[in-house]
Length: 376
Image 1 (cartoon, one colour):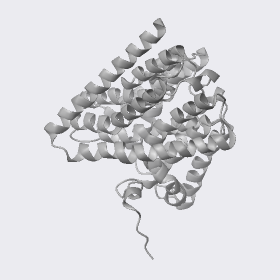
Image 2: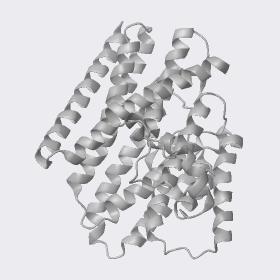
Image 3: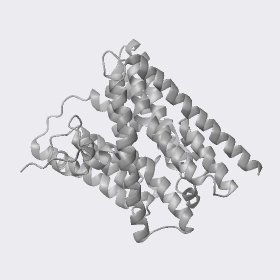
Image 4: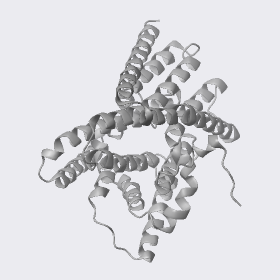
């Protein structure tokens, strides 16, 4: 018997995507959400998983697509990311800024402004520790990783423009990977507190995913491939359960979940990739919206209840964030992607300029709100 999926939910089961990679995304966002809920101490490794996946897809879209189409690349990234981010920041700002204390209002508005221009990682490094208790007062603090990702897009865009003039493109990518990894290790030895947010410390993670396209086809027996995939999946899960904050990037132990993610990507025919990971693929499909909304809802709940939510209250908050995420994905994120595909090149570019312009204007408005709140 065949069951028809309701049209509104069919968006969670696209047929033109790798369900195993969507499952990896689902696992990654689940780890992050449970970490922010206080239920999983090592769930921050979900960000590492996300970064490797991003490097994999951006490597294909930019460095290994011939010919490279710069305008298409930019439009795809902006329509994919900016509308949902803008919607979240506008809604949360409207819900919070008019009643919180002036000091909180100043910081929240400034963080929102930084997020809209994709510099939130710089805000986080300068203003508040991501793993410190006061982070619960910042509903946009989690956007640091989105800023990091957009900065990677800018770098890989430049690489796509100039690498064709480099004789050995693959070795150039490997060279940048090694330099970033050395920089990251040096930061670890030096004890740099801001390395967690730094694009140069994270570049090797992105390029680890990109370098998958440089690998020759793996020739492993079915038994070995299945064992490696199972070990890789288990590595990510165990890291999420047992890692402590001291293992966060730039710790050398951040390499393990990254390599495990790359291993799963290159082996799509294993039992784990075909049967286990696809279970989480619907969550992975809307993982961007889930990531956007779960943290602001947690922060808002803490403000409203005036205590740190936990237990069943936290469970209810997470369910509420999933509802918000679903509507964000269906009504904003997916609509932007469909529009980007169907609009004429001229209209698509004109609307993109308007979208970016509106984001800059709102960022400027939030900056003014922050400045006025500090004066008061």
